[in-house]
Amino acid sequence: MSVFKSRPALRWLVPSAAAAVVIGGGAAAGTIVANADPALPERSAAQLLVDLQNAKVDGLSGTIVQSADLGLPKIAGLTDEASGTAGLANLVAGSNTARVWYAGEEKARLALVGTAGETDVIRNGADVWFWQSSDNSATHLKVPAGAEHKPQSLPTGVPSTPQDAADAALAAIDDSTKVTTTGAAEVAGRDAYELVLEPRAQQSLVGQVRLAIDAEQHIPLRVDVYAKNATSPAIRVAFQQISFDKPDPQQFVFNPPPGAKVTETDASKLERDAEKAAEQHEKAGAAKLRGGGKAPEVIGEGWASVVTAKLPQAKGKDAEQVDGMLGMLPEKSGTWGSGRLFAGSLFSVLITDDGRVFAGAVAPETLYEAAAKK
Image (cartoon, rainbow, N blue to C red):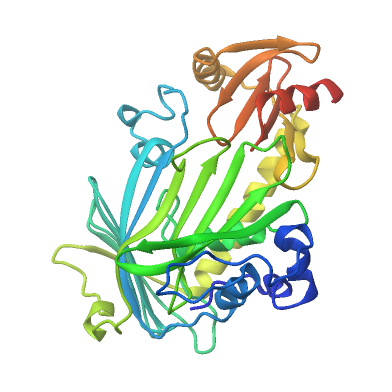
C-alpha cells in the first residue's frame, strides 16, 4: 500500500540528487533533520521521503476524519445544507467520517458514514461491490483476472484518506517548494514525524502542508493544509484510530441486505460507460465553445498558477440561477473591468461581468492582475 504506487513519477524525489535540491532549496539532505522526541531517532526530510516511497503494509483498519473550514461565504443553493448539497457543504465547512479496512490489493473496503446513511466500496478478490444504504441499492461487478480495477476511493464528496491527500501534496513538490521537518507528533496514539511543504511563491494562499508520517510503518497518518499566517488547518485528513493488524476476512464479504436493489455489471461495461461519458463530456465542451465559451488556460506556474476560462452565455432558467448565486457575492472592479469574487482562506475565484473566470490558490490581487492581461 505505497503512497507512490499511483504516481510512479514521484520516485524521482528520493533518494537522488533531485531530492537534495527540493529540500530546503538545495540544502544538503542530511542538514535538515526532524527535531524528534528522544524516543524517536532523528530523520532528515530526504529520509522521510524515502520512508514514504518504500512504505508497505499488509493490513490495517481505522477511522478517518476529514474536516474543513475554508472561510467561504454561505451561498444558497451551493454551500448551504438546506440546498440538498450537504456533502459539498461539509467539504468546505464541516466534517466527514470514513472507515477503512485493507488486507492487500485485492481485499479493501472504504465506508463513508454520514447523516444520510452509509456508502461502501468493497473489493474482495474478483468481486467489487458499491452499496448505498440511503436507497438500499448495490452494484456488483466481477474483475477480470489480471485487471487493474482496484477501487481506491468513494464517489465525489467522500473524504480522501491521509494517503490520498499526501499523494496529492507530494505531487506538488518542485523547486518552488521548501521541504523541511519539524518535531514529532502523535496521531491516533502513534508516534510520527512531521514533513512540511511550504510554497515559496508569495502569491500563494497556502502557507504550509504538514504530513504526519508513522514512525514505524511510514504511511501518512495525518495531512494538514494551512492557509498563510493561520494557526489552525483549513483542511485536515487524519486517522482518528488505526490498527495495523490484518482485518478479519469477513470484513470484505458483502451480502446485500433484504430488499436491496442489486445491479449486476462488469468491468468492461464500466469502461465503456466511462468512455461514453468522456465522449459526451468532450462533445458538450465543444458545444459550449461554439456557444461563446473558451477552453481553460493556465497562467503562471506551480503554487501561484491561475486557471482561466471563458464561460458560454447561460440562457433561460440557468441564467436566472447563475445570476441569483452571483448576486450574493461581493462586487469588485478595477482596470480589468468588474465582476464578483468568491474567496476563502485557500483559494479565490473571480467571475467577470464579461463572462471570464479566473481561479487559483492565490490572493484576489493575483487574479486581478491576470484578468488585466487577458
